[in-house]
Length: 194
Image (tube, rainbow, N blue to C red; front, side):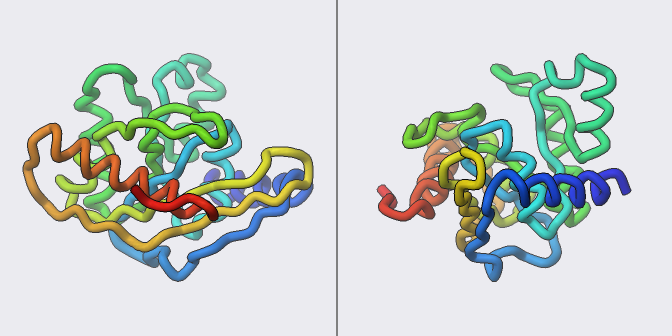
């Protein structure tokens, strides 16, 4: 209920802030467990993801955001759950598996932090590990455009990436995660895959 109310409010606010265009809607699965892997440039990204994706999204958020009980309660109501960054957080990983195995959708930022426009990052391996162990597809999604008043922002949904259920060595998991991130970057015009 809270998610839908905030989504409507956010959509209304965004109408007056940006001109949002969506590409690749046909790549969004209507059902089943799925990870939407977005690039991360701005604090606006989770809001834009939630408004442009027709599926309800759950997402990991750094544990520091939950220290304020009001804000923490709000984002928890919107589907966020805490993750300790910089170390393996087994509780957060189990939470992600629970969401995906219940055939729900999850938002992950493979970069792990905000990256300035034009910059590129090394992917965090978690996105590939979670997708593989939960055996769900990953939809690469690129948000691009200038975060300025009434500027055009494009959200481009790419074709699903299937990693398949496997127990890979850390290097292979890192390669799979980087492939996902490279696919995200390739959705921006003028950028080609490695």
